[in-house]
Amino acid sequence: MRKFVKSSHSAMFMSFLSVLKLNATNLKLDYQTMLVSFIIYINILIFSVLYCLFSMLPFLTIVVILRFNHQKIAHWLRFFILWYGKCIIRLAVFPFIRLTYEDTAPDEKGPGIIIVNHRSSSDPFLVALLGGEMIQMVNGWPMRLPFFGFFARHAEYIDITQTPYDGLRTHIEYILQKGVSVVTFPEGTRSGNCSMNQFHGSIFRVAHELKATVTPVCITGNQNIPSRKFKLSCGHIRVRKLTSLKPETIAGLTPFALKTQVRDIIVDETSKMDAMQ
Image (cartoon, rainbow, N blue to C red):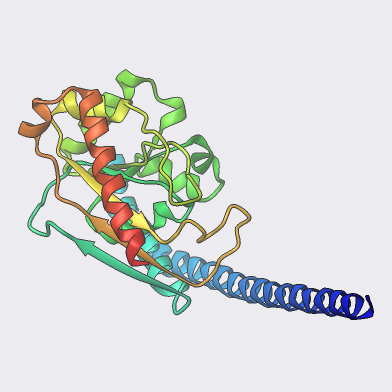
């Protein structure tokens, strides 16, 4: 009996030590995450301020030279937004977050509709890796931000919550005719994990009607960069641009079939990419 009691106490003690060790490990990891988050957010703030300061004079000079021509100013705004995104993802997060960009069809050129999966709030920054002139379709809140919203509106970004279908189609047709691509996240909201939400169909209907090129793009590794609690951790993010679906291919599909095919392509590719993490 005494031997049994002694054995039970020993087991309980070892279990208690295991819990303490686990808690200590979790606490250490949490402190590391907090430190990394703090450093990265400070870097983002510093780089944002510096970028604005150094780009403001050239931008104002361009505005004056162009005599406040809205279309030409929108072109330059898209250029400044693109390089701001590149600055943040290439410099502000270094060396904590590694980035790998792969273009599986580098010879494909020209404007089109770019379909991207949506895991994190960092996705709109990561599409800057694609290069080229582009706008994004966004939910309403980015357009209402005091500073960034101003530039997004004047760069002709699309507020999907305030744009009826006919207006959406007309605006995208106008943008594509100017040689500018349209980036969209048809899930509508980020998944926050490795799963993928269902796609909304409007953009595929537009692509079908306009006979636009559709390019799938996959992003993995950033589902917790940042997390929904805005914590940032070290990691490796992959962005992969896939082969485009050409207008002649799209013409043989219904909008629903196009949506299903593009989603299946991205699901299959992100699964392969997740296996590499």
